[in-house]
Amino acid sequence: MASRSNRYPEEFKRDAVALLCRVLGVRRSAYYKPMTLSPPPRVGEYVPSAALGVGLGLAAYIPDTLNDSGAPYVNPFFSSGFAWGFAALLAGYMARRQRVSVVAGGATLAIAVIAYYSLILFVNQRWYVDASNTEDGLPSSAGLLSVGRSIAFWALAGVSGGGMMGWLGWTIRQASAHRGSTALGAALGLLTGEAVFTLIHVKSIYLGPLDTFDLSKLIPSLIQITLAVIAVAIMVILRKRSINWRVAIVVGATSVALSALLWYAVLTVRILL
Image (cartoon, rainbow, N blue to C red; front, side, top):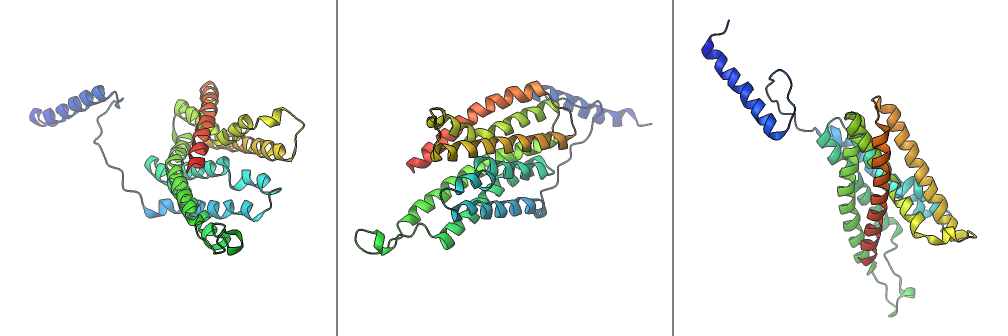
């Protein structure tokens, strides 16, 4: 049996931990457990997100190789708000730790931006204006400045938005019923935000009859929404934990509205750059 003098430090530790938990509002277990630090993330934990980013960047270039009549219908799968958001969500879903999920989500989209614009710079070269299309008859590389602004803008948006989507992916997989349901609703809203904004913004869709332009906006938007619902449904099945559907629906509806406003702000800023 331990002596009384040896028990006092242990009791003092328990009281100190209890006081700290009460101040911070943290629930503590019934038994005192010493705090341990998690090991730093290994490089191998980010390999899936790097592969996802490269694959997404290359796939996003596919619509650029098609004509105007075919590209809009391929965009939902490779170069849309859903495609990029889902890649970051999946990177976070596969992460084993929360902080890794945030970095993995942001890194996925940042790498995708670099991969995509590398093709624009060195393969497509649409930034280059040949002599036949300039006023002074000389070739111009003025489009490089626009490409540079696009890279900076989308990389920043990818790191911030991708980090959030990565965290949502991890939360969907690992968190409790309430937090997981909240993350599911938020993810669904963010994945459908661009499509919902397009359906609201292109008012000619509701005036009829539908022309080629209207169909190129309506059908891809509906495809994005359908893909988002399927993706979230699969995550619900794989989650193997209870879902609070009331929370998921309320958060999802709110997230859709906020996401549509966010896309309006993003595209407005992009036009001004």
